[in-house]
Length: 195
Image (cartoon, rainbow, N blue to C red; front, side, top):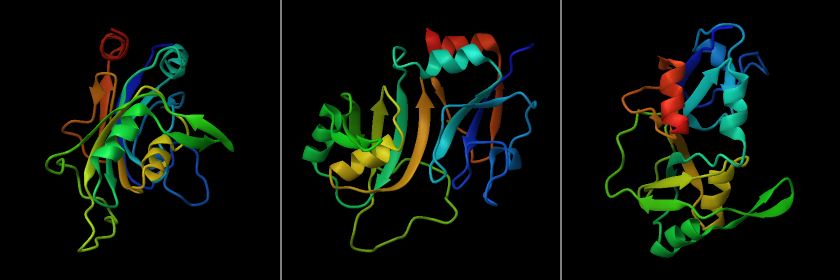
């Protein structure tokens, strides 16, 4: 088997799977890849951004195993004027609920963008409210629990409006638009994720 490796920019409101479900959009509506290729990890239906597709089962294990602790960088647009205290709390770790149990997140890197990042328009766009700011936070995690970023920003009082996974390790979506796909060699993937 020749391993195949792709990075894609998953659009908003697309399920992280190839098979149809409930009439919702799925990856095969946007990306044509060999039949044995599947997504590594998940990205929620209402999130967008970087997803790795491969048929290399060892990559799946190595990337998702907690001992690997790969950096995952998210760009998060939130509801309300973010305080320095909220940024400190995100960095220190907050308590969220995972599978009905309290879970303390690991320390993270968090910062406010001085100016909004250049990102593609989203369809439909976030709701706009004239007197309530919607700033962007850069959040870098070394773990990936279910809906973790959304739960973290909510825990510090700023619900997520838009969520883009920008980077995993040294792989990112710079210059890509929703629906774009890039093919990689095994060497490129190894260098970007494991060195």
